[in-house]
Amino acid sequence: MEWPFDDRPDLPPEAAAEGSVKFDPNDEWLKNASREQQIEAMRQWFYARFENPANCTPYDSGEGGYIFIHGGPHDPDDEIQCRFSSVVDYDIMEELIRDLWQECGDEWAPIDHDDWDYEDEVFSMLPGRRTDPKSMLDDRLDQIEGALTASTIATNFMNQLLHSAAITALEAYLWDTTAYWVTGDKSVLRLFVEGNKDFSGEKLNVTDVFKVMDGIEARVIEYLQRFVWHRLDKVKPLLESTMRIKFPSFDGFTTQINIRHDIVHRGGRDKEGYPVKVSADQVRVLTAMVRKFAEEMELELVRVYPDKGKESLYEGPEAPF
Image (cartoon, rainbow, N blue to C red; front, side, top):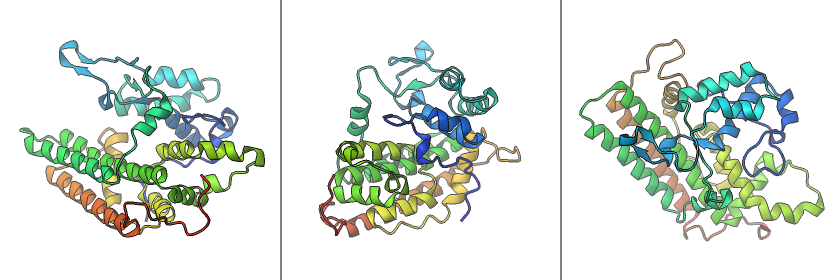
C-alpha cells in the first residue's frame, strides 16, 4: 500500500546527539544529511520544544488572544535560525519555517514549563489505566461529533479542522496505548527493544550496560514521541512485534490521512492547488472508522492480555529491565 501523502523521511539512529533527553540532531551528521533529512531533523527538534498554544496556553478574548504564562510566544523563524544557522543553509531552514508558519503561525508556546521537570512531565502524562487510551479517544471523538451537531453554520474550513482532529485523535490513541504497555509491562518493553532495529543494532560496551538499563524506559518513550503515528503501515509491524497483537485493518485510512495531509501541510489545498472539500458527513464517517479501529484493537489487547496485562507475553528469561 502506498502512502503518497507522507514526504517525511525516517531518520537513522546516528541523527540524534548522544545524551539528549529531547531530540537534538548530531550536527556532524546534519551537515552531511540530505535536504529532506535536514528538514525532518530540524522539524523534530522544533516539535520537541514548542507546541500549538491551543494545547495548554490560557486564552482570553478580552486580552486579544493567548496569554503565554510559560514564556513566548516563539517564532519558528527565530528558533530555527538560532539553533541551525551555523549548520544548515538558509534556504533549507526557510522551507521548514514557512511550513511551521502555515501550520500554526509565528506564535508557538514552549512545551517545557518553568516549574516542570521534562522527564517527570512526560511520565506524569502517561495513561494510568489500560482503559484510559480508549476512554480519552472516545471523549475526543464525542467532542468532534458534538461540534458538528452544535455548529449553526457549517463551513468547509470548520469541517477541515474537525477532520484533522479525528486523525490526530487516532494518532494520540496509538501513542497512548503503546506508551501504556511499554511502561506498564516489562515483557513488552523487552520485546520493543529486542525487536526494534534502532535499539537492537546499537553497539554497547559492557561497562555501559547498567547505565543503559536505568535509562531504557525514558529512551523508548522519547523514541515513541518522535514516531510518525499516522504511518499505519509502520505502526502495524511495530505493535505486532512489540505486543504480539494482530493489528486491525486500516483499509480506507490512507485516503483520509492523505486529505488530512493536504489540510495541515498545504493550507487546505491539494497538490493541484484546489481547495479540499470536506462535508460534515465525511467527518462522521471518519470518526466511525476511528472508533471501529480502536474497538478492534481493544479486543486484541484483551485477547492477548486477559488479566489486565499481568500475564507476560515474553516466554524467555525474565526481562532484566
